[in-house]
Length: 407
Image (cartoon, rainbow, N blue to C red; front, side, top):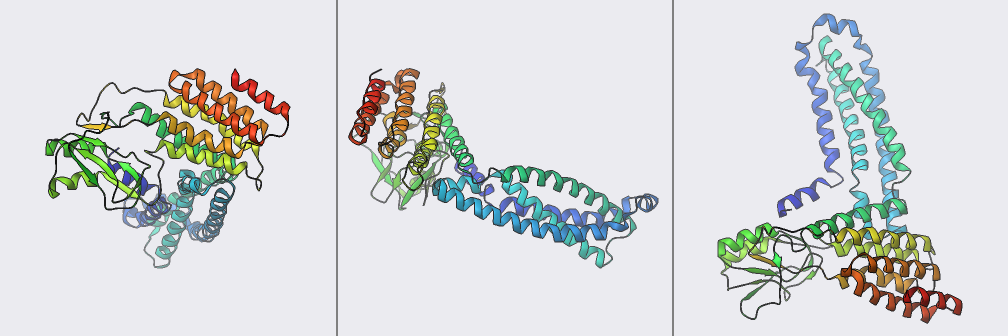
């Protein structure tokens, strides 16, 4: 995904974007009847009886305003619940929920459609033909509202709940892991050790690297006739003294500009190109559930079960072609992935034998799933056992965990 595609994707996920489009659609739909009324035969307009359109629009305008206000308050409550009960890092995914945005957009668009229709009717802009077209369009709008409200009622039962939010985080992490498994080096070659000669690029920004445009780096490298090696992957904290890119020769200021623009730095980490962030957020959800204030080990067990699906998705590597041959990129470190996910759960669940039983079983599954995970799974299993033995009080529980760790 190029930088512009990524920016457009993030822009279209803003909460106000879809309501704005639907509001404009409602405005043009209401004015549609004015401009196209001459195309409708007068006798047809008289037959369908469109005199009731005034009352219908008044009902729609008043009810949609109330429903929109209620929906907004419900959404704010759901966002607060996700922040309090799950983790603030997952709230972004709840805000970007397309169903919620479509529902809110439909209600606001309908309100504006009704409002413009009422104003146009009051000014006499519609003739008999225009009122007939407006009546037919209003019937279509009512059908859309009925379907939307039924979906909204069903969706409200899940919005902001712990399970639903975990599903969203798992989906985001899954997409990032699958994308990285398909292109483990972002379309470039595997990076080796950094050469001694050459030149390194730094950025004058402070924050997290959110997106890396590999295609733009390839194009800039071809233009400058150089080879480049990425030194920092998305999710890394960037500052002016950190090297982000190695270049095979020194570049002048004009040549550097396209390389700088390929990096997007923001205040927070994002899920798209940062698989470690998704795993960290899931682990954070489990850790919060294990805190004394929440005391919900079942959620931690649920998160551990989801990790098998996530790590299995990361195994599906398939990068037969290298579209960016002038670019070298380091791969993800399996040790970092396991540490991000399992270490916090093992630490915070050290005193709960049921959590550590599930943790040991999960690590055994991953150990047998692929040789790529075997060594790190054994290491995490040993570390988790040490934490549990230092905290658990009953010797029988310790013996059970030792037996599981040695299988």
